[in-house]
Length: 87
Image (cartoon, rainbow, N blue to C red):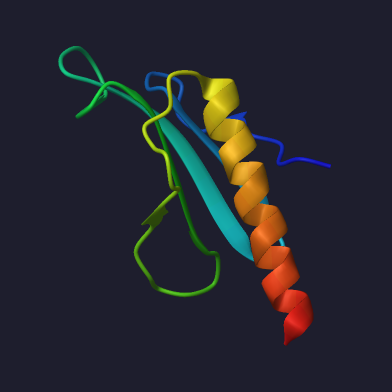
């Protein structure tokens, strides 16, 4: 089962999801306009939920579509789950 993203802010394109102690955020960036400014596309990041650490950009960001960003986050969740099982 994949992450279930929900819109975090009404006036900005930011979605978030939590799973197994990790937080994921997808935000839309553009060169101009409202919201975050940067390379155009959907930027996906993750971080441990209960640690005071900065976010880590998901490889491949920014993505052309929200679906691509969501799929990449799902793959990171699978990878993190596999690492957790090895401990």
